[in-house]
Length: 398
Image 1 (tube, rainbow, N blue to C red):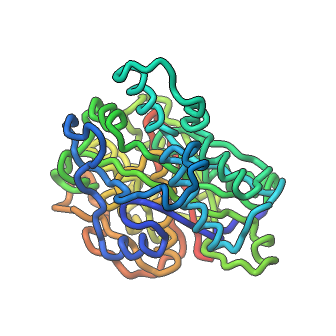
Image 2 (cartoon, rainbow, N blue to C red):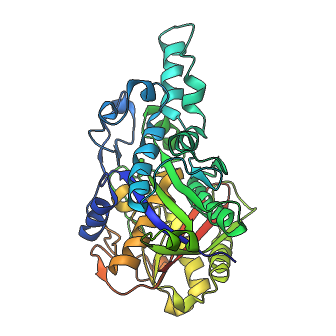
Image 3 (cartoon, rainbow, N blue to C red):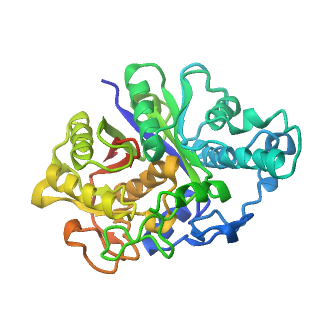
């Protein structure tokens, strides 16, 4: 079976606009959560989120591009630039290259602006470019056009597991021989009035902070941004002298088939077990788990139960970086894969900030508040979505 490696990574998120800055923020335990700044935010009950501050798309894209780029597409294209530069790849990659991205909402800002125009402002028409802007595949398609990717190109929409599903499928595309290079990850820009208002209805949002696994936690905090990684067949990467950041060792995905919103420890445990088996690793090989860790009572308890089921009393270090960059929904697994890369490359496990005290149901080493220096040879990155969909990615030191 072909081996798959990561040769490039790029990001924009509430912590930084590149991978190096994100690593620094992870090490320092910096929080990117603050007051929401967008139209009608004062009408919301939840007034905090992890926004990309001072984003000026006019400085990054042409007017013609912006006519087609919703905010989520802007984030994806921006992150892909860094990833491709880091990988040492240019355009015209052809039929042996593709892109698979995750996004739960697609161009939600375009939806919202168009609804406002028609319903609130009484207009009878919207831009003819609304559909090309809002469609879920817009970001992946623009990466295809930018870099000449003529192989497999599509988008995965599986709520909070979207990016992990996308990366797992990209891994399988290269393993199967369908491609040599895949741009993959996720992008999300759900921080707008309609996006937050919809989540408010679920009553899972924290009004003050995200405190995964901590006693007294009150829920999740939403973020936005993107991360794009370059997955490459190992011999292809070595032949061109690329720097290898890590190996994409395995992937596991399951469905709970039980409840549309309530998480299942059994389904999450099966996904982790499948990822380990696919990577030909045992539980003791894993040094760090980047947890789904949303900060809700139900998710954190179910995830900790699943980790105990798979790893027993010798569970590895675990943390949730969502307390720093927020829950970026369909892109969250891609941004969290950067935490795994940092652990593998730099030997630093990012902390779970905001931790105020242990919940007896989450009695694991969750690397509370301060990053920890430790050699890590393999990681798991967990993503568990509404709909009972679980996706776990295993990375290994190159």
